[in-house]
Image 1 (cartoon, one colour):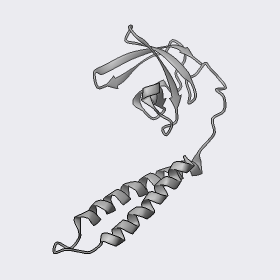
Image 2 (cartoon, rainbow, N blue to C red; image 1 turned 30 degrees about the vertical axis):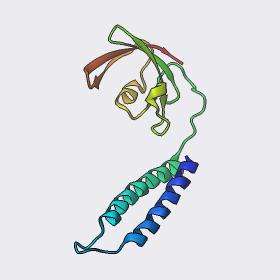
Image 3 (cartoon, rainbow, N blue to C red; image 1 turned 60 degrees about the horizontal axis):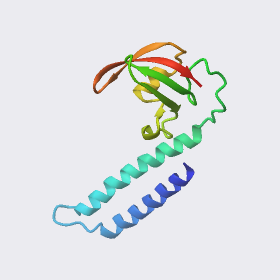
Length: 139
């Protein structure tokens, strides 16, 4: 995360240099490229702020102390609507990667899973409608 922060800060510096380079106003008052670069800089700066906040307030989660309750770090096997089973790893929002079943504790499913116990059933609103989940195992 610190490497990504440094890369974002370098990108912000590059964007500032480009903005200064192209900041020659035309008849309308501002060059469209400069406006585009400023918008991109705003996005980069907001990402930098988010990363800095996480790095200032992070908490290291040690090995799962209890496999009775779903929490960040849990590996949860669920049965979906009495049919298929899936295994999810519950992680922090910056570690999330749905392609490898790492779901954020801040996602709708992650929020619903937090604090649940073995055999608990719950519903989550999905694009296809409400889905019913049942916790089959927690590790």
